[in-house]
Amino acid sequence: MATDISEAMRQFIQDRGMSEELIYRTIENALLAAYKRRFGNVDNAVVRFDGEREVSIFAKKKIVDGEEDGVDPVSEIDVHEARELDPKAEIGDEILIEVDPKNFDRISVQSAKQTAHQSLREIQKDSLYSEFKDKVGEIIIGYYQRERNGTIYVDLGKMEGILPKKYQSFPREHFEVNDRIKTLIIEVNKTSTGLQIVLSRTHTDFVKAIFEMEVPEIYDKIVEIHKIVREPGLRTKMAVFSNRDDVDPVGACVGLKGVRIQAVIKELFGEKIDILKYDADPRKFIKNALSPAEVQDVIILDEAKKQALAVVSDSQLSLAIGKQGLNVRLANRLVDWSIDVKTVEQFEEMPIASQSRKAVSELFNDSDYEEEYSRISELPGVDTVVVQSLKENGIDFIQDFLELDEEKLAEIHTISAEQIETLNKLIEEYVEIVEEDDAYTQEYSEDSEAGQLADRENPDAEFEENEEYECPECGAKITMDMTSCPNCGIGLSFEYEDE
Image 1 (cartoon, rainbow, N blue to C red):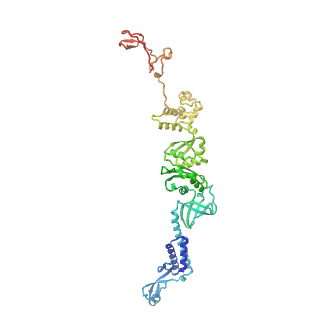
Image 2 (tube, rainbow, N blue to C red):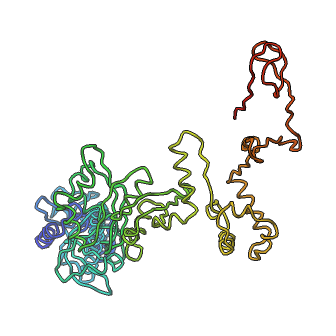
Image 3 (tube, rainbow, N blue to C red):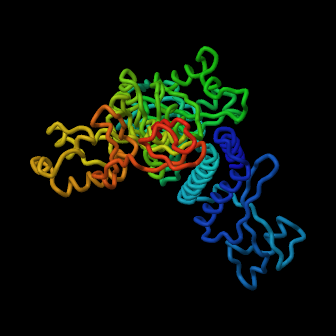
């Protein structure tokens, strides 16, 4: 028995990679289970291993005088029998009696085998769990074994992992039996049937781990990945930044002649990858995130709600949005902003266009800027229904609206009085109406009726020609009808000077 057990121990240590201590404990528990099944008690059972991995089981028995007290064959031995084994044995001593394995019946052996198998399974499960639990988030390479209900079973060597259908990239990926598969360990679970290792090829960490393998700068933390978003099998966007000024993060990921990025694309079965530079400025980051489209401008609509507008040319609109909105959808997730893409023409028609121009002018001009509105449609917050109704009646400019009297406004039945009042308030708020001052616009001319000077406050007053002045030479009183001073005789001439 000892030789058989020793050989089994060597085989377990070699095949399973289990420690000797765990093997010894398993065998000890199995022998004790067999002993208990055979003799009903394990209090006096002792299992010993020698240096050659030999194992033996002993029964610890107390030496008694069998003639006087009788003998319990399980836990006691007569003194005469004990002295045959050890001449120095005395009554009251304890002696170890080796148990012959042949004394175990079939049921006892079967109980030992079940105990050993159960212990080995638990030990192996705990050992593998500890090993693979530390590998969660790492890349592992296995081989395609079989497929069942869409789930691929992958041979990992010591264990078999599962690649569920939801973690497979469709429609690009396709595997055959014994194909080499590179996957990411995402879960390690203990189950009643053993250990379950869940694998994935769709997680963003899978792409990150591949880049760490292909790009030394990422592995060394010189270039860091800010964020990765992905539509598995279709497109991936990755924002990177460099911790050193002399290292281009995008160039490092692409590699010389694109050798690094091509290796990643090959592993992802041709999935498109956009690598862009991360920027703390949301405007620049949004512009980069919409690559490969060229964005002319980015307008922040609501910073609190993270809403932005990207302006592109007509030729770049479809590229910025992407097929079925994929490009802008990934850009939204990458920058964590809600991005609306418009062409230049669409942007000019939006009310936000005038507000944007105002903001730019306020930013770059030292003087206070006030937006000049000429059309009713340019007024911030104006009702589009009112704008359309006025256009249908030939009224597009604010000046045209202000010149309408109440009767003409009443003839426009599609606009209510409340809407007209609201429009007037908008005009008062955003439009400065300058009234011409007659004191500065009147012109004087002796040869025309328009040259007659009139007083603004008293238009009926006539010009008094006999108004008195002082002679510039002697100070005597003179009037405008005089041609010379009556006191000093100096010639006089009266002229008018425009302000």
